[in-house]
Amino acid sequence: MGFLKKLNYQYEVTTGLYMLETWEKYIVNGVVCAGFSLLAYTAINHLPTQGMNMMSQLSSYATI
Image (tube, rainbow, N blue to C red; front, side, top):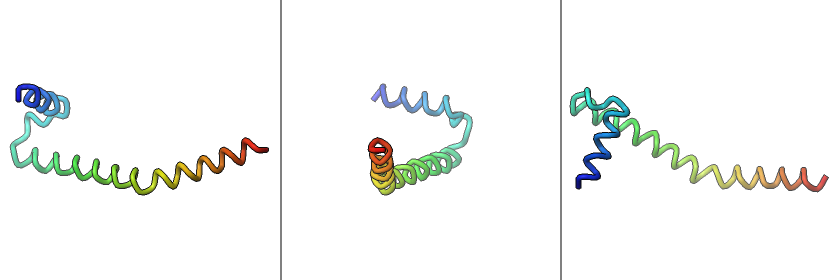
């Protein structure tokens, strides 16, 4: 449990959340979680397609 408390303390000090009130921390952390969720969604849905397109283009350049 001590490791998680230290990790949370480092997160709050690094991002400046230690000086906010509890309800403000919830709002900021919610925005951060939403951002990471959108990033993960985009990576899961679009990265394979983009990777295949890039590999196709690279293979066509290699055959020239």
